[in-house]
Image (cartoon, rainbow, N blue to C red; front, side, top):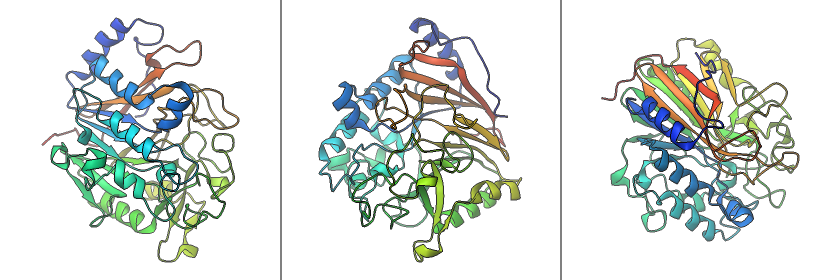
Length: 387
């Protein structure tokens, strides 16, 4: 499980080749998921006049990847201030226009979490208005809940930040970064005046709910999406490894590249930071059926590593994968230009085939299209069943 597989078909080859070879891979798939995140959209448009989100959506239409749903790991916004404080309706409208741009797919097929930049100062007004997981603001978000292809289950009524999508015998947990919480865990009060507060947090309530669901659903296959990666897994998730990728000193700098805190919302001083509690849970429960944990947050050039960590990591039965970023311009102070990229996921029986698609190449040896050195095969705990 989790081995990188080199296959013929993408880098340096013409579009006709990768369209034909790729369609053969996913036409017969039982489920097709598009994986993306970290558009930081307005900045991409302002710097390059390049709409990275709309372009990526158009690319999926062009190659014929007829996805059943999209998992987006957040960071639609690109403001260093909370988006509502920044008056960032312009970016919200850009995002909605992009999400509704496909002639083949509906806006409701996007299942999203927020990233650290999408969070407000003690609230989530901008995200709720334009991304609108619950479909409560359709006049702004253009999200018609009746068109959602698969149901979601919230941790509790109204709590869109923690939910799962149920697709046959597959559960996909969508766990947002709780960056609207109190400093240093989030932006509430803006102790440093501005900043992304990049160190990640999920709430204690979410963590306890997630663990209970995993243990109670061993007959299901389970995927997880968080904005930041699990500590000590993929690139920049070790302590202080986010330096250079994530600028500034807001939040908890040593944990700026990972889910660093289990936030006790009732007693913030009792929050747990800087532990491997997530990996420890999987080690203690080898019977779990979590097979894929996806994140965004850290944007890096194709092929780059930090302290030996790359975009994939396998441990305790879980394949960890950094799937971002759509932006090629939202980069840390020590990182050069990066490729705009996303991943396709095609599930057939017990096999999960994951492939990286570059939308905007930057490095000379990278071409637009699928990257043959970035293909991953994961085995599910159970054969996928749609019904």
